[in-house]
Image (cartoon, rainbow, N blue to C red; front, side, top):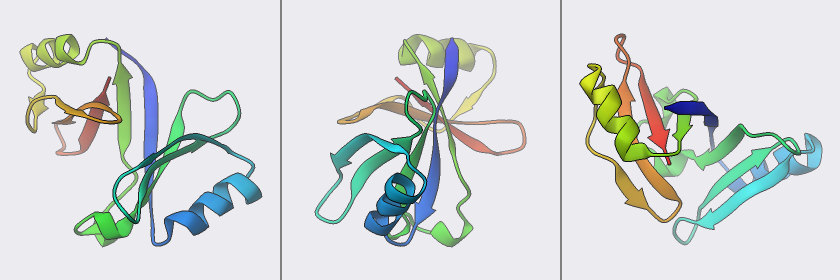
Amino acid sequence: MIKQIGTVAVYVEDQQKAKQFWTEKVGFDIAADHPMGPEASWLEVAPKGAETRLVIYPKAMMKGSEQMKASIVFECEDIFGTYEKMKTNGVEFLGEPNQMEWGTFVQFKDEDGNVFLLKE
């Protein structure tokens, strides 16, 4: 079962400038910073002790980023079990869980076509 909202993505032009803003100006801590290629990182920031984090994601890595809105990631303890249960309940998924260096993810839609991410 879903246990919390994990991350909300914020799409930025300059990831390093945004990192500086959120950490130095807002006072958030860096929760994760994993390389995603030569010019970007999987960067999460959050208030000290918070469970929900902001992902600071570079627009250059997202096609159509001009239309992108913040995205919600739901965390779970068993992505395959949660995927199967939600699928059985009629939730439409956009593929199967995909293992990546920074977690296992799968996208799903609500009835209005909004897309969310499920992460373990």
